Length: 237
Image (cartoon, rainbow, N blue to C red; front, side):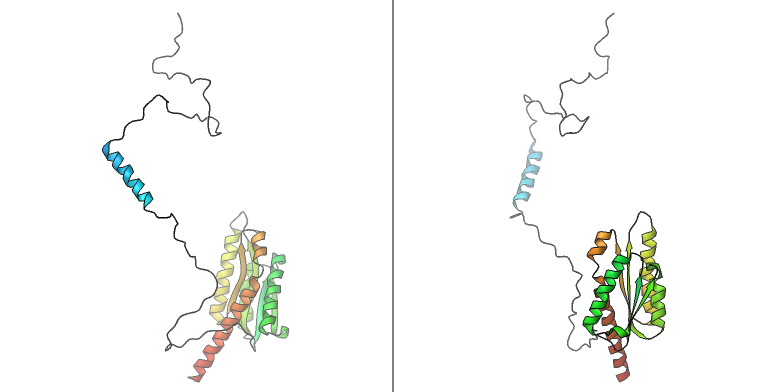
């Protein structure tokens, strides 16, 4: 009794000379038969295709509108002439400037500190009125900033540090608590505290942003000058 080539309901084995396309192992391309005529489209399908072609032709030259993204550079407010405006400037102050700096990731923090001191020199702040307080890491920055602010010797505080994302959730806790703690130090004391802490994914990103210390100094000096104007205005009235 001979064995049948295929059992009822069983698909025949594929031909050995079939070729896979696309470079994917185990994927076989199914190509249409050259002798087979394509199915004719009914009237509704032809109308839909005609509408699609018209919509593509109506797009003009195909240029999409350019999206303008908002930049991070500070801008100016457009206010009416009859509205009083208080606005600070990043200039020197008669009171001192406190800097809290993290020793962790010291190579980056040193670059931040260097750019911060250079910006203070440019603003006319003497080195004698600058105090730098070093702390172990970014998590300790808020407590140090609070302590300096409570002395009332400093017009503003600049916090410098660097937190680089790792493989655990440690980054989220440290970066988040540092940000909220520094904001709390400013809110509770009324002394401006500038956030100069880098929160990055890699060392390369941190190196590219090492000049952010100068930006934090400008923010702190501007807020200190703004608060000084506010006090003077309140006393005059």
